[in-house]
Length: 347
Image 1: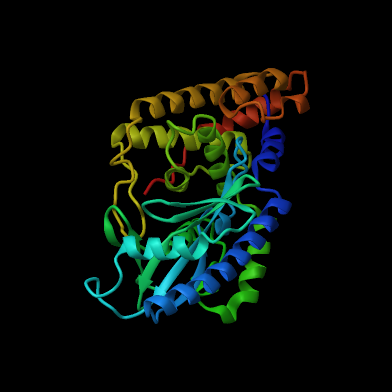
Image 2: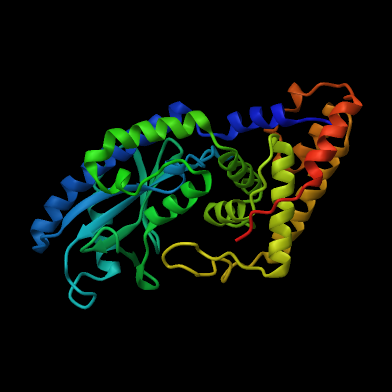
């Protein structure tokens, strides 16, 4: 049976967001924060608003599960928090805050292509081919923020909790205070550096699932769902090719039993598949992925095995690096032992 672990490692390096693009996003995010604070100071004075605003990084960028999509439209999420003690009736509406933030940003910057008002965030699309999503919150306590959703109103939501939930899965030592308390900024930078150097297998599995979904972006679940499915069904193994195959099998079994993906943090228990329209297509593609992974692991020739991985993961999977030779029986025996002990991590 062919061992394609090194090919998956090379593929991981291809789809993982590069240091150059990561630095670019950080610079854009920081510049956008400055622009937003300047714009807000002008608008808030005109409207008589007295809320303090703060920023909190969130999402896949922090967890280092972000990928470079095929179309190049990579992004970063940067939460904007209005700090105040007004109840829902007396504070500005979600729609009003969205309009306020959009107006504060949409002031003729050459590098911004457009500013889009979406239901759950303001999206700043850059001409260079990436975007920044700014979800807007109101809170008197950063531990209990409410998301300003234009369509659904105020929703209790805490994205930092999700980071904490995921990081507990990989036991990375993450603390919410890294993001919520500026005094721990240096520790946060060190933690970020450490997790990127260690690159836990679960982070790679999430990237593989996201890259797989990116091939059929319109039909596949979002990155949040992919992350939850991977984390809840993760199968650890010394080889990534075995780990991804077994994780996919666990996901398939869980969804066949109950096609749900519950949010593990606030609002806890929300079924993220509730409005998903492509269940049959997703389960079909999931089955194809599992079949291709099995064929790849059963194929003794690495070059031929690579083609099976490429069938699901696309042309970016590096078959040009595969060896056109069969492996010996020792590797087959090793794989048989490793693949026969099922250890689902379902919750």
